[in-house]
Image 1 (cartoon, rainbow, N blue to C red):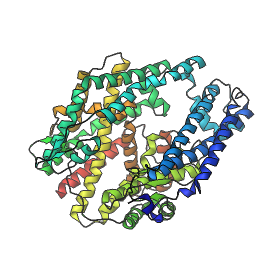
Image 2 (image 1 turned 90 degrees about the horizontal axis):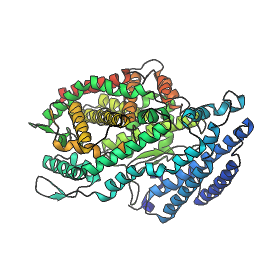
Image 3 (image 1 turned 180 degrees about the vertical axis):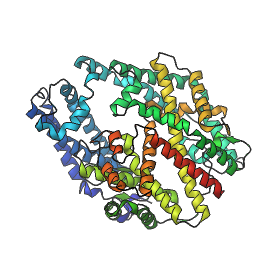
Image 4 (image 1 turned 45 degrees about the horizontal axis):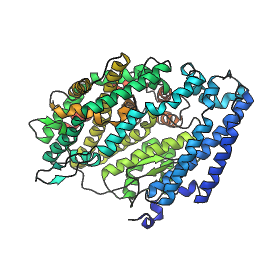
Length: 586
């Protein structure tokens, strides 16, 4: 289907940002004028009135640029082959470069000023200014900062090299199915093959993909080490104890939160071992191998779900959140927040995005599967989180941190899955639902925590001036894999190379936030399902918080304290509960 053949009612209404493309160009001119005005405040921030004026101009720049950038990209995502919007995206990108250049003076000058945050004139901007000023002890003199900034491209070299290698250069041999038929192996097809019923195909894909990473093991180890070294250098020169300290401090996360995640997960690994044993039993294999990790334990439910049915299911599943939440959900359903179906050239996958001052949008490529019903619930969780946040915070405090970003989406999925499990009378469907839930836990809580532990160990070694080699990286990863999967899993030789194909490792100490968000979401959803007094209103207060508080303080609104182990333990206890329930249904 071509984009022009889509029914209007099945597409998102980007006219809510700009009624036509000419408005896009009108606002690009507004931004350029504002940038020039803003630059005129350079050197004047010690005067509080000038600072307030500068911030107000900066606020307008962010508002208009957000609209420009989102509109251009979302128009392009409708059909990525459309040259009009390819050009528009390029123009938005050029404005971003200009914005970065003409505002780069602001934070360094603010940090060198003697501004008093308690001044009443700064009351509206105190949180935003506090987040900047908290970094003051880590900012060097202007000349040094300028030099370090100019070297940032060199610092990103390892990431760029890995990205080029992994996305452009590496090629894999075809894999073979049980009938001897060859299949092309790519990053995209690999995940599909690993979920196949054909064990011969899974094994072939697994062996072939890691054969290539093994071939380049020394090169990739050197690349990983170089990235860890540059991160350590930039952290230390900015007076942090380590990369670990730098990355968590930037996001206002206490360092012990990270270690609590790992320690609490270690304490609950017995639940994962039980799951692995259950997987071995369900697949009827004498030995369970790493290429069996994603094989389906329950075949897809054959039933198809129209988009109208999906909306009804999501609405019913989330009704426990109250009328006002459902009214926002219905507003999104009824007023074209969602671009629903696939068409030629449309961006793949699903996401929620938007700009301040306009409702959020959701991109889907909906197929009538139960998995896609969950995708709808997930992305509307993000959208409604954004809606609450934008409605209650100014533009500087509206954008919530990555640490809490997956809470609303995962909470929605958890509420929906429990609703469907309570409704269904079909044993096969119930098994499918529980298996879906368990796979989420396995892929997020356990896998991402294992990744986080790998990063913790390897970056600690770098901070102690130890050298990372292919041999040491392989051994660390292989031993962690054995620890997390237990004795019932054959840790195949190939799995030791898995670390070398994970792009997120080039953004140090990022992946742990998937696990912490997931744990927080499970803890909150359990409170909601148990109808804990006041929890729904507390949850909406959390959704409304944006970044007006630190991520830890925001979650405490829901009585979920991520500075302690309890939420992690609670989530993993839920996992153990459903492992046991699944075993009874086999």
